[in-house]
Image (cartoon, rainbow, N blue to C red; front, side):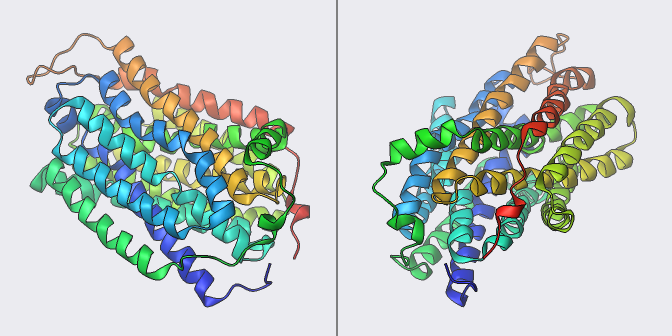
Length: 415
């Protein structure tokens, strides 16, 4: 590995992060379309949760194949084809008049998005000094949160102006531009990396070895539990939660989504730097997990003011930024296959999100008080949401307890 990255590496990594930002917009956009989607498809919260989680099904399944391909071939063709899948998925989703067509669209968007985050981290691992990896993970996470930010209020405004279908068509057009740039700028082949020249261990045996390494699996599980604040709350249920709690419209409620993503953007960089300063990834993960849980409880049970709730949501997002550090812990324990390691970690993270997204919908239906709106759809009040999303802070407490079994890896980083 070169001690310094060249300009080409920065350009390739930068374009990969732009694609990651774009797929996050597609991923989170349904959070400001919940009422429109429920009305279009005459769906309950459970059906909506399942529809949105179709993204995670394909995303999770394809994580490991993407990681293995990246370790062997590099990002160009994989990222380019992935962008095309996102475009096709968005077009299907936007034109669907049947729920199963919309599900196929979300499934294709998830398939196209599968390599986005992994590609950014694989490029960072192969093209930059080891000690900067955690910072680059933080910056990548920040770019993703910008995608989440753009998928909040701006998309809500667009949905209210031109409708959810037209908005999604516009997003597919933006994806086309990104796909063209990927094929035009990222070189067809990358310089082979050291880990590609290792012994002829098969991909399957590599994955099995990673699964047997508890210091790869454990930070991945912790990461998934910490990421529930984003994968479950910010990406789907935060807008309807704020709408129910404060009786506001989706545009105003979408500001909460924007605030939490801004918090993650700031926290991803700040906490990565903080971890380097105190020379401990584990301590940073510990205090972030428990403080996020306490902040979440404060939001659910104590705060009754919209603006103070925005502040709490920012804090939750900021502390969630430490979640990305877990990827560094996992990668440091299996540095020979960074793409596959990060893919496995991300697979676990997204699998946890795929389980909990519809689970919240099921809990909402369970606690539903029987209220029907004028449009004939179920109305979920603030108490329903409080009872359902309490599983998130509970999961954060579990993440905190699991972090006591993490081994410190920061001392392994040197170039």
